[in-house]
Picture (cartoon, rainbow, N blue to C red):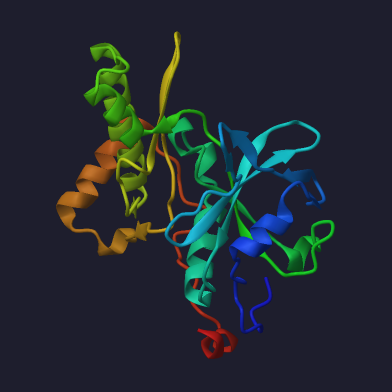
Amino acid sequence: MNANRNNWIPKVDAGLCQALEGKKWNLRDSTIRFGTRVKKGKIYVVPYPSGVEAYAYKVTDEQTSEQSFIKLYKTELSPKRFRRLEWLISQMLPSWDDAFLGAPRKWVSTDVFGYPEGINQELAGVMLSAVPGSEWKKWKRELEYERTELAETTRIVLAKQLVRSLAILETVGLTHGDISDGNVMVHVDESTAQLYLIDFDGFVFRPKERSGLLRSWAIQILRKVLGAPDLVTDAMPSLARKDVTVI
């Protein structure tokens, strides 16, 4: 990414999202295709649902058919926020535990990979795997109105997965920062039940040296029990002098 530009992470609007529909983008090690709108009944559902601050654009790998999302931001990200997310990506959370498969995998940008076919506008975003299942808030609604069932044993399995995933983060000084029923995905079928955490943008990192004695002891115990991973680096990147002018 180019730190000297006024637009650290270029903002994206609905017009660009529409222009991207069905377009290919060569990312060197793979070629992805942006999704297209699908007609459901009398309405068309776009492949880039809009959140508060970003679009989650569904894309498909042309070679493997694997589906992912690219998070395209509606506002320009500051250098500080970009560096935080870049640090989080460098930790490779998806390799830690299945619960983190929906965590950010890499940055993609026109600076690095060139433009998607037929597009001449800059864009950049975070790529993350599309995990199966539905948001917990949807599950809650279905369960409340008894439209579906979730066995007690399955609920216990999911609860244990949630506690384990949060504990793993805690052992390295990380907090998700926005645990809610919209950021927890649940997938249940006849043989498996799996919980996933998504949307790590609000994460908090507290280095070991800022931990009190009790917390340090608790972390040591958790690491022995969980076999938790180590951080690639526990030094949160600081801003370079040249970045200060573009915040």
